[in-house]
Length: 170
Image (cartoon, rainbow, N blue to C red; front, top):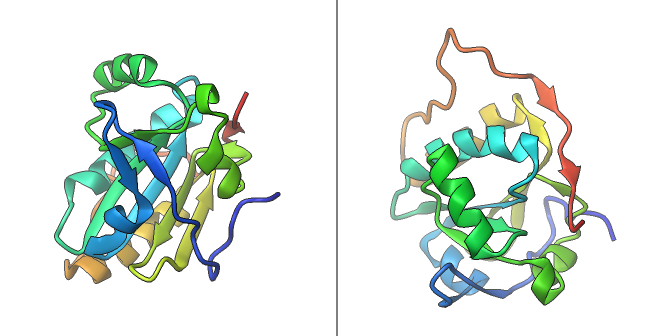
């Protein structure tokens, strides 16, 4: 199965957070547009891209939110978050449980990011790191959230144009 594409309905799911509380797609998207990023702690592309996704999450509003789904257990992801100063809300879809949500979404490479609307329609998909896509995605979030602009990149900062992600689920 290949990754789900824009224009398809996102499968519902239930995954635990670090405290073991379950969260479903239905709950997460009830506020409006949901940004959902699948990642692995060991992936260098995930490590660099989550910095920018962290910036998106810091702009959280009542109509748009950003969550991540780690393919590692909480104990490993906790150290990753601390080392990289990641403050994203996270869910866990690890090997221990057979990656059920990663399988349902067709994740074969991480990072993979989806924008999902309140009706469960996938509006946007980004696989790996593509700077141009991460210029477009904040615009979609900003317009949904009623914000004028979300700035991810400093004008003089070097940011890779493209970085291939890592194989998922291995």
